[in-house]
Image 1 (tube, rainbow, N blue to C red):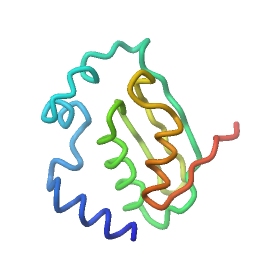
Image 2 (cartoon, rainbow, N blue to C red; image 1 turned 90 degrees about the horizontal axis):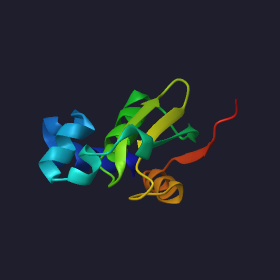
Image 3 (spheres, rainbow, N blue to C red; image 1 turned 120 degrees about the vertical axis):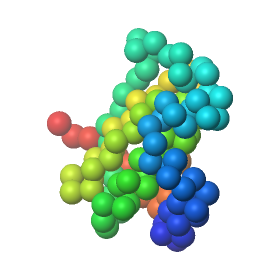
Length: 112
């Protein structure tokens, strides 16, 4: 199921699927996200369960970057960690958890 969603994403976005959020946001007209001040941005880091390869991490990054209110997302396969920068006025952590779950992964608070 996850692979089907990634294939669908790759088909729909082509080469722009791996572009930075700023470029995607500009194409979509997300001016609120592009004009955010650093003090408005919150960051969360979670452990992710369900990664089986690097494609999982890249796909999760790409899908999260397309969520409204997400400024940046970075995921690593070997460590199974995702870090998301977001605008809390536009998206909350519960919505981010749901977006990750929709892709077939689970996210938990990162322990220090």
